[in-house]
Length: 89
Image (cartoon, rainbow, N blue to C red):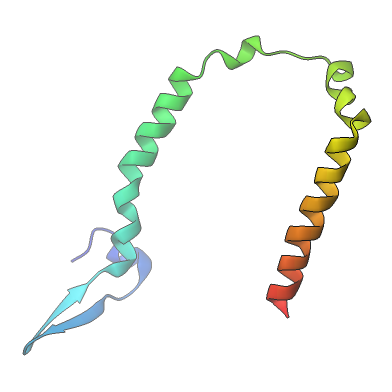
């Protein structure tokens, strides 16, 4: 029986010679859970210096005056927007 087999549905039956064995393929993603939990734990306690980065709204608004920002926004929108449009059709 799989760890969370009941959660993902019935297992795939794998045939090896004359024997069949259940394969809980839907549980394969759970191999990443410990690594994601460890990374989240490390980020939660290791990234405590972000509170020192403070900028007022006036300091952040300066990006709207930069021409390069607008060119890159249009390029990004045109590139990936058209990609999604072509992929959908």
